[in-house]
Every structure is written in C-alpha cells, then in structure tokens.
Image 1 (tube, rainbow, N blue to C red):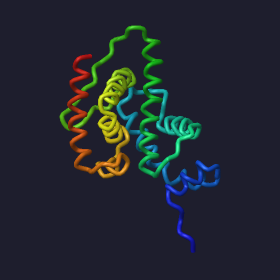
Image 2 (image 1 turned 90 degrees about the vertical axis):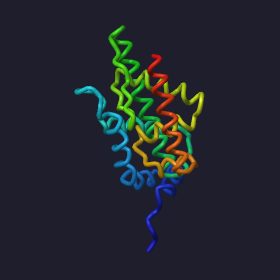
Image 3 (image 1 turned 45 degrees about the horizontal axis):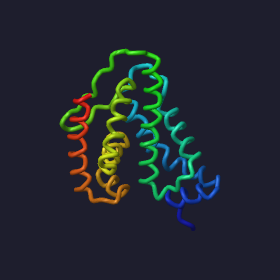
Image 4 (image 1 turned 45 degrees about the vertical axis):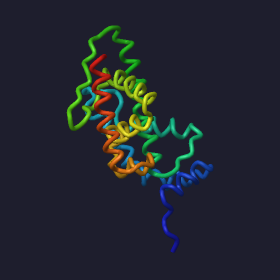
Length: 185
C-alpha cells in the first residue's frame, strides 16, 4: 500500500499543473486556512461583509494565480497568512476612503499580545508592518506569522529558518518597535 502524499508533495504536484493534487491537498490544509482567517476576523466589527470562508477563498484564488513555488506546508501557510492580511488591508483602505475622515481608533497593544485589528485600524497596522519590514523583514514576518497566522514558535522557526529562541527574541523586539511606531501615529 502506497503512503498518502505529504502536503509538500501535493503542493509541488499542484504547482506543476496536476489538478488532482489540489483535490487531495484542500482537505489537508483547509482547516488551517480557516483558523488563520478566523484569527484575522475575530475582532472585526459585527456584520463585517467578509466571512472566514470568503477570506480563505479569496486568498486561495490569489495564491493560485501567482507563480510562487511553495516550499512546504509551513511556507504555504505563511504566504496564506500574509495574503489574508493584504486582502483585509485592501478592504480596510477601501472602507476608509468611503468614510472620508471618520475617526480611526488607535491600535491597542497589550504586553502579552497584539490586539486583533478592526477593519478601520488594520490599515495603520499594515502601514507600520510594512515600515518594520523595510527595517527588519524577518521581525515583521515573525510578528505576522505568530499573531495573524496563529503559528507556534516552532512552526515559525521552521518557516523562517531560525530557532524558536530567535523567534521569541524577534517577537519581543518587533512588539516593542510596533508599539513605539503606532504611538507616534
């Protein structure tokens, strides 16, 4: 009996044009994608027009259209988390432009975690994360993967290619930098 293919193998087959691999891959990663989407949406305003399923579908569609090669499951989920953040940021920017000057509440940072942003302040958070990425891309990636991707230190370590201890240090430094950056806004 042949063992079931791994997520990495299925990702490689899918990117090579095997549509059957996508059918096998979807049930293996869908729950992880929904978890990431739910994490992003948990603090959005009630009645938000984007639901977790729609966010997953939009992210998956954007990723399918790209020519990116996914190295493994962790890399795929990291790209999915980043793609979902960009979708919500685009949504927030469009919503903000429609409001024309509405008050934007500040992003709240707690010592032990970053509060999940609402659609109104996700734009400010995204701007700060983009600035952090220009200063230190790895710290920005680690922050996004942990808080928005819901990945553990060990999963981040594998995805980024660093140790779990370095993930911890990067998170602490990135949170401090982000708190300072958002306080100046």
